[in-house]
Image 1 (tube, rainbow, N blue to C red):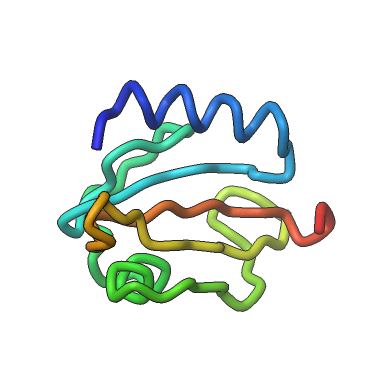
Image 2 (image 1 turned 60 degrees about the horizontal axis):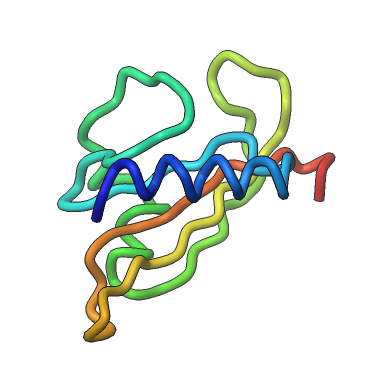
Length: 99
């Protein structure tokens, strides 16, 4: 996984899909790249990560994140290598009103 590739891909995704409020990727239980500054490192216990790292897609229940009044959901999917092995997780927070 390459941070610069993630940055470019995330910029394109957010330009085409403004409903993706935040995009982030993770590997080995830690954030790899995120489109917003956060003070979180270990995310291994979070359901969006722990489910997707097992190879499953994940959709959270609606919730209100800290620091906002906008209800959102989190979507996450596994990132696979050329051998179809899960090497990380791609996730996004989407405002419910944008769905």
